[in-house]
Image (cartoon, rainbow, N blue to C red):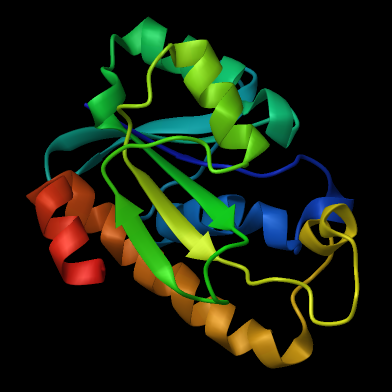
Amino acid sequence: MELIAGLGNPGREYRETRHNIGFQVIDFFSREIGTRLESRRFHSINTLTELQGKEIILLRPKTFMNLSGKSIKDCAHFYKIKPENILIIHDDLDLPVGKIKVVRQGGAGGHKGVQSIIDCLGSTLFPRIRIGIGRPLYGEDIENYVLSPFYNDEKEIIQKAVRITANTCRMFVLDGLEAAMNRTN
């Protein structure tokens, strides 16, 4: 069983923000495979479903970004999912807008949601899909930048990145992490 979690902040005001790219991928992927996130367990909205006979959980924490680890830990503990079977999707300031990088493990790189997961799981051994959101172009401070929508000229790039990332999630479940890394990176 795999757990695929997209990071973001709950609430309408955050829906289209850079920090919520993980939520956008989970929503797109769930629609693509014909399921809906309806369960409210684990401080999240989630679903347990199958993809070509393989059980997966799609999850969006309902905690704020900096507390994402609690939701991930509670779900993983309940289903006895090892860190290497937990795929986290999150935004990354250090990648250009729309660039996608699949990594096997690593540190938080300054991302507080990822740090929360590391702290709660006690492990860095979970794979991630990092989606580039770039750096501010107009002097915005980082906190305002990540909590604001993409610039108009970035929206098409991000829509494409969401589609590619959803496909990468599919590869992760059906073909494994190595295949997802090789085909996406």
